[in-house]
Every structure is written in structure tokens, then in C-alpha cells.
Amino acid sequence: MNRQNNQSVLGQSHRKRNYKPAIIIITILINGLVALLAGLPGVENFTAFDVTILPMLNAIFNSFTFLFLIGALMAILKKNITVHRRFIYAAFITTTLFLVTYVAHHFLSASTPYGGTGLMAGLYYFILITHIILAAVIVPLALTSVARAWNMENKRHKKIARWTMPIWLYVSLTGVIVYIMISPYY
Image (spheres, rainbow, N blue to C red):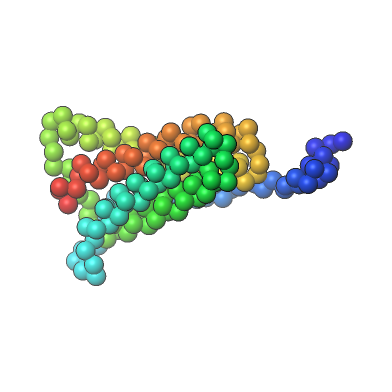
């Protein structure tokens, strides 16, 4: 009996979808938008609300993403797929909220330079640079991981998730650390 018939007989019929074009488009849009905003000066004289609250919201959303990812990791280690899935979706939601506030902040205000010196400046820039690079990398990794889960490609999902989870944890944690280090200079 072929695989498709076998799945139908077992009641596990699942049509795989090709998410690759969407993953590529979303990755280009997100990373392109962030790169574009890095080169813009920010809106002058924006007074509708205090934009300095946005970096704090970024850190809050990153904190929740980190906690949701830890929850997802603990759930999958206990083989609780339902709870794992819920935590991953929560992490995607908080990451999306982070992205919205990040884009808004960088559109509405100029970049804030780090004011520290010496060892602290070196540490700050190391964390910031690795955070930025891995934040760009995590977009296609996270999207590919969830696409493989949706397609029930469990072995392939597990294989990429072994890279996605630690990188996403690093990006969300270092986002908070970057905020803490630069917050005195806002």
C-alpha cells in the first residue's frame, strides 16, 4: 500500500503545502524593512505620544518571547505537543508585536547611540551585532520550522528546530540585554 493510501486508511490524511515562497517573501519583507529603517533618520517633531516607550515595549515583548520559548522547549521535552504548539504560537505573537513596535520606533525616532565606553562598549556592540545578524537569520528559520510542523514533517521539523530554538532564544534574550544596556541613553 502506498504512503498516501496508508495515511488515509489510518485517518491521518494531510496534504502538504509549499510554504517556501511565502517564507522567502516574508523574510525579504521583514529583513528589508528593518534594513531600510536602519538608514532612515526618523520622523522629526513627532509628538502624538512619547516614542521612548517603544524600546521598553520591545524589551517586554522580547521577554515574553523568551519565556514562551522556554515553555515550548519544556513542553516538547515532556512530549506535550499541544502545549508546545501553543507556546510557539504565543512566541510568534509576541515576536510580531515586537516587530511592530520596533518598526514604529525606528520610523518615528532617530537611532540612539550607546554612550558607554571601554569594556562595556565592546560588550554592548558584540551583543548588538550578534543579535542583529541572528535576528535576520531567525526569520526564515522560525518560519521554516513552523511550516514543517504544519506539514507534519516531524523529522525535518526536529532537525531544523535544533538550530531554530537556541538562536531564537539568544535573539530574544539579547534584545532585552541590549535594551537594558542602552536604556540610560534614551
